[in-house]
Image (cartoon, rainbow, N blue to C red; front, side):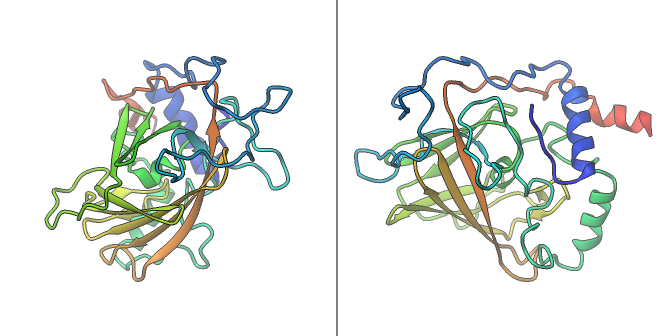
Length: 281
């Protein structure tokens, strides 16, 4: 599947996970492969013009609709548009890899992350086939389908048929939310940037393979820009005094995937991965 982790442990866990936990699920990357997507700007030779202008909705704002995956295109190379080179993000194992000194963990969290890193994320909810939080999903090697309307952005995750709703009508966030995997998200436009504020995620919500987390105190702001037809940038700021000593910011990049659609990638039923790993140990 073209997975490229950022450390040896991530390679190991990913490989075992997809071979072991998904023995009873399809390992195909997508369906309807080769069926032409509509309204795709193409060059004369039929290849996708990834640098074409950003599509826009009827209200004039950027249309974020499309199938997206983490972009790890080496600098200077042409970004692919196919489903053949799905990769994880370089921040998948460590979301703070680009932050000097790493993520600013609270003292209580430091030994927990160290243990999770050392044991190759054996207690990872992803390995146990539980839902992936949206921050995590941006970096994993699974397709995300954005369905964008004037008042709603729905993100469909092919992994375990997950979904997220972002209400783009700038509604107030709930004062006492019931914690959930994706939290509660409200958004508004600032020029051509969609700014999403999210609260109400569950405690100990993993956001990378090392075991960094969000807590119920966390507030997440995403600033999403569709740079052109084929590229999207997501600036993420996390303010979570329950887990971190100070707010921190990272930037994630996504690329479009065309001529393909999502496919079921289910490992929820009769998950046996962790038990098998324990037997091997």
